[in-house]
Structure formats: C-alpha cells, structure tokens
Length: 176
Image (cartoon, rainbow, N blue to C red; front, side):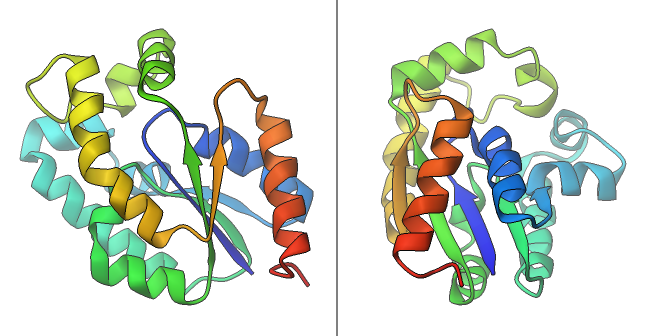
C-alpha cells in the first residue's frame, strides 16, 4: 500500500501525512525533505545556486525512486504533479489524495509559516497572492487528473483530515 498526498503548498500534506502514516502504521516520507537530505542543501539554496530547473530535475529523480517503494505515505511537493511520466508511474500502484485549500487560506498559512523562506522560495516574480492564483490555475487540473480522492483541508484539524482519508480508503477497499 502506498498513499500519495498531492496539493499546493501549505495545504497540510506533511502534517496530515504524518498523522495518516500513524493511523496506518506505515512510514511517512516528505519528498521535499528527502531531496534536501539527499542534496545536502535546502530547497532555497538549490534554487539560489542552480535555479528551479535543477530542483525540478532532483524532484523528478526522487519521484522515480519513490515509484519503486511500497508501504509508505508520501507527501509530494506542490509542483511534483508537473512530472507526467513519473506521476503516471507512481499512480500505477498508489492511492493519490489531493489536499485542497482555497487561495486565501493558502496565502494566510504561507504568510504565517516561518518555514516559508527556507523551504518555500518564490516560484515567480509576482507577489505571493498573485503567485498562488497563477500556479493554482496551472496545477489544479493536474491535481484533479491524478487524484483518486479530494479532501478539502480548510478549517479542519490535521487529525480530522487524516481520519477522513483513512475511512475513505477503508470504505473504497483501498486498505486491506
């Protein structure tokens, strides 16, 4: 069993993923953290030194590696869905859950999160609200394409979201 959490930045993928992994008694892995550990640099450092294309290449390689793993809850970075071949591979033997939030909630969460600068460098030259709107318009069709289940995360506690996913998977018989 492999559960993949997708969605935009600050929709709860890491926090919910850890709680879901506890409920399922399987390991949790955050793909961005995996890349950071493997590269020995923060995402901001990678982007600053080599640009977003270099990070996206590392992300693509990590996705391919994760396509071979099992028994895992995996939180992907917000842009990982742009890697079509790797997403097709990873979806083939996984349940993919889209954690969805409204743009104003994402903006509030990003603005209040101290990790934003180190782990979430700007993706465009726009202000944060414009960037969120622009990227959501490009990514939401991909989130929708890959998702087996969509869960709204606005105004819900991470434990509540994890339990909702757990029971939805159990009901759909994705859990044995």
